[in-house]
Length: 399
Image 1 (cartoon, one colour):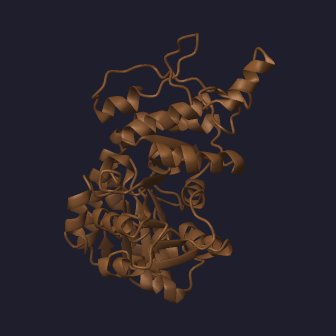
Image 2 (image 1 turned 180 degrees about the vertical axis):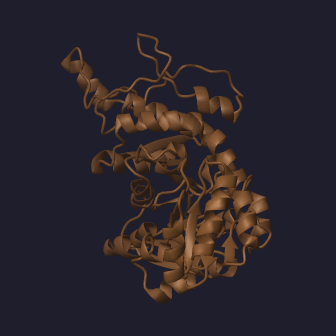
Image 3 (image 1 turned 90 degrees about the horizontal axis):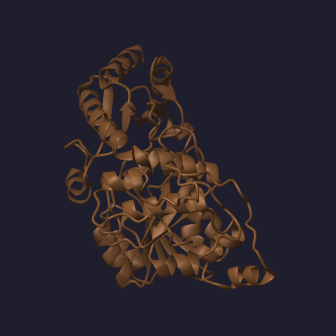
């Protein structure tokens, strides 16, 4: 990656970083970041090509390796996260898999919290074991369970905090300390918190992963993912894996994600304020059995949320009466909020995890995770919260 990013003053606030950082201007001096839809790059001489492939990657040689538009996205997210290095991927799940697969081999141990997105669970419990990696799931809320699982030693630890879909929290600082004591590295999926509401690296995590499809784009336009960590980890482990396996982010998608970062804090702040208002309404509603939201004092880890997060989240889960039938009646009665398994979007979206995102899990596995048949996940968008409350109220009454 080149070091010719447009120079900015040091010590800038996050709002300025989101609007201005990581700009690679061409000879035309454009104001908006350019989209470099090129797969390859040319050289004036054969000697120059030889040098390009032999050096440290400061020159673009092939867009599977690096691309100017993708590099701008990586640099902007890196500065926002406060990481030493960042590499983008084609999707969030490509980021999760690459973050782990690039550093483990047969015989290594990986320990993860059991409250995971279905595809993350699949990677931990199905994919990695095929290659001889020993994996174990633990109750992420229980530090004694972590300590016991990590006692034999570990190569990598993986967790989501808050988790999908029940918004379970991990004490990141405590788990990081236990992980390092066991000789491993901690990978945190920070997608529900975004880079704005939680800083896993500052809490002791080694690697952070994102589905940039969610809040970073936040407008339902683009797939994308990112892995952030130390320069040594990215250069020595992650980059060779990405180069040779090919989960490259499209330059056009990278451009969309760059545009998304420009308004990330504006959207997340508005969505969190609306989500808090909606969660408070739902908690009082007679037809809602339970609301899981880190911004409510009723959340079992409310104090931990206040300790390690600067805001609650744009997502919540609610349990409605009547099991699956009641949850379906509720979703079908919504007039404004739409049914979709996506999240972090500017439009409010709702899904039924037991039959969508977590349908692969056995009923007893879902029960352990608190994913009941009446559980619904709500992603709060940018609509007026009064309109969302009215829609939820009429749908709950109809259900």
